[in-house]
Image: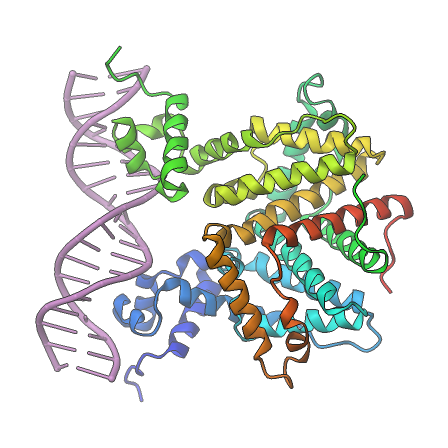
Length: 222
Length: 222
DNA sequence: ACCTGAACACCGTTCAAGT
DNA sequence: ACCTGAACACCGTTCAAGT
């Protein structure tokens, strides 16, 4: 009691998650973590092979915020949609950690929980196993991928974001109409609304496409 | 002649692109670039505000490999599909640079060229301007986002990739069926085929969903 | 005007030495 | 068995000083 407890993976991941929550993911360095834990930075390597290893565990801990329990009366489409939107929200909050969750499935507790829930809802949709897997991969690619793109801007205050979108729109509008007639023509609609709106549009279109594909087979591209 | 030319943005971006092509994007550091150019690393800051600035230009240079010219008899859907597949291929080749292209539109030469071409094809598809913009954003989110997810594995040799996919599949299959019944049920189909196959499935589903949405309006989620 | 050199404030990781 | 301390091999960036 009062004496520093022996180091453990749990103590380390706790301290790391705190550091990330308070100072952002870029604060999660071996040196700062050693300071927070009152130990030498090199002591961490006795519990984790490297910082990436630790970052994966911290990343999975943040995924605990995604709720996957089925809701009464909720269609499978609505459930998939809701889970993807929540997953996106978590990734936008912790952009640097998200990088690691992306490279390969970590197969840690929360990631497995989310995977299982998405597969559960897709199976409820009546797809056969191969279709379920294909749909699952599509949804993850769009959801996690779009979060990767949007994370930088999401870290800015809302006013700065709107200003940036307005600037970009304006810029496309001032391009040479001889070289960029189509960009000039639709400039006023680029980066319209919020990044969340644009994601939900894409998600709904993808879900619709998945449903139609499952019913009619893959469309032939003329 | 023979004497070192004065430094310029062009000389720097040339040397940087060479460094990336030969030693990967992680080799593009101020110190290594200074060595390649025969100047002090700090001299770069007279031509670029910071390394991110330079990386954006190098990134755009790699996008030159994406062909956007319209092909005779090619439908707009086929053209969009082809451009997205080519864009993905470039991003998979230079994963580290892709990070920067993602944060915000660079609006550099090649990015503008690709944007213009995608908007051109979508307009050819008969969408109204707001639909064109929404479809464009969806396609970019999926294409660039999925490339972000897949880039790490794409850097591995094909045999290692297939081994990893097999391992992951096997792992999902050995989960506790009481806790993960759906993961166990579809395990054999997860990470089936190549990442490119999975991307094309998602891309086709998204394109289909976009077409149906434009015809029928957004689907209501029950 | 343009570049150099030194310095600042950091990184991840290894490994012999200590307790 | 577990941790420390020092070291290695790096980063991006700034700024006074040189030519």
